[in-house]
Image (cartoon, rainbow, N blue to C red; front, side):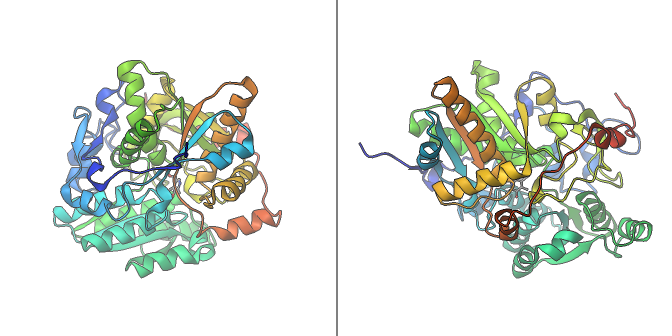
Amino acid sequence: MEKTKKFLLQESELPTKWYNIVADMPNKPQPMLHPGTKQPLKPEDLYPIFAEELANQELNQTDTWIEIPEEVREKYKIYRPTPLVRAYNLEKALDTPAHIYFKNESVSPVGSHKLNSALAQAYYCKKQGITNITTETGAGQWGTALALAAKIFGLELAVYMVKISYEQKPYRRSLMQTWGAQVIASPSMSTKAGRKTITENPGYQGSLGTAISEAIELAMSTPNCRYTLGSVLNHVSLHQTVIGLEAEKQMEMTGEYPDIVIGCFGGGSNFSGISFPFMRHNIKEGKKTRFISAEPASCPKLTRGVFQYDFGDEAGYTPLIPMYTLGHNFAPAHIHAGGLRYHGAGSIVSQMMKDKMMEAVDIKQLDSFKAGVLFAQTEGIIPAPESAHAIAAAINEALKAKEEGVSKTILFNLSGHGLVDMSAYDQYLAGDLINYALSDEDISKNTDKLEKIV
Ligand SMILES: *Cc1c(COP(=O)(O)O)cnc(C)c1O
């Protein structure tokens, strides 16, 4: 019998609702706190920063299903539904009895899953009459996604891009500019937070934390302007559940159900997106699927961080979030998976980690590239360095299945392609990349400084 490689849905099968797992969680995440008063956050507290609908979604703990607006579904059709693919050639190369499937989010025009939330966020801003939006971007993927979404919905966008990426990754900057966004290297002289950083630390190459502070400051000081964030927050994870909801239908087409679901982990949005719809069956029906997040060994918030209230940014503008964190002043090594260099995890995932509803593994940089190259040579797609962490974790599980002589069904999310990251592959192929060791002291010197609230 001929084997099916790609499992495809019709446009008419696009999900009509996002899945809000908080409504189903046995233990809800602890409340986020107002950074000034330290009181539980109310949606109104977020209105100056975020579009109101997004602020409401952020704190919604009661509605299990949230309607995807018609206008957003219409734009999703540019690239959704995305394929679910059986990785036969990778299975063969590993000589494993495991069945490996991946959800291919790299087919979006920006090359990653981030457009799923960018379109939703731009839409809600537009609907509220907002004209300008700001954001930060590290490796550039969120900025590129938002640049396209802003153009589609007719908004002006200013992106603060971490300076080292701005200089080393000119193509993501060109993508954003092609889609019409203004791109500013961060730290910049255009905000108080940026000026403070530059004067205290001349020559600083920038960090996601500083860029977030700059973008929020601009949003709060500019009329009719709001800030947007591409990961970490609950509403971002909510929008990304469109990935897992499609995958759920596609797994049905394969006649299998995943034993293991894997996503790489920066702030948690693509991991949440692929996992939550399947985790629903663990919560509701007692299914025993394992959920594994794959983070870089050099930025190990879930495997080695502390559970503590912490800020999402360096300057302390964001709400205090109950999260696994390495401390908001943590400066991760300059690994090539830029999208995974974030100090904390979102509040939903952090609570799940605490409640052992999911697991985390850390992947060394060289192992991630080795996995990425094997995937490219077997399945043809050059993965984003971030996604290569999920591939490495999937390979580890497939090899364990082989050792144990059992067949497992493994599903991972291919969060993006690596075609704009070829300088990283160049360095790997030339033997110029290294693994970064992180001592316990490197971690505790930041986490010890966090104010203890609980
Ligand atoms: C941003 C990004 C990530 C990490 O972000 P999450 O919010 O953890 O998903 C992973 N993969 C790609 C391709 C990205 O662009």
